[in-house]
Length: 109
Image 1 (tube, rainbow, N blue to C red):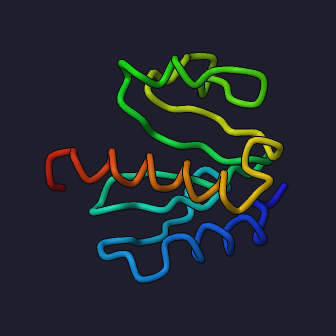
Image 2 (cartoon, rainbow, N blue to C red; image 1 turned 60 degrees about the vertical axis):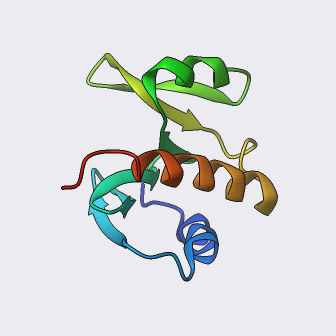
């Protein structure tokens, strides 16, 4: 299954004008990197994945937000947002802001 181009365009709209943002196709989806760090990705099986500090990521887990799992292993600090969580442009923008702000605190690549 290909990633959701509409969601990718919505993320592009949120990131418009932001410096240091690049796009990279990864794992069948599309990742948006902030200063070289993967921040938000459009998943090939729906929804998005975002990166937050490990110590706070668990606080967001709920009905439409789960910990990311890759190869059967939980990826601490990575969250999967289902389509309902990011249905509104306002909610999507808030998630993108959170994850890009965090990525910009990481050491330069």
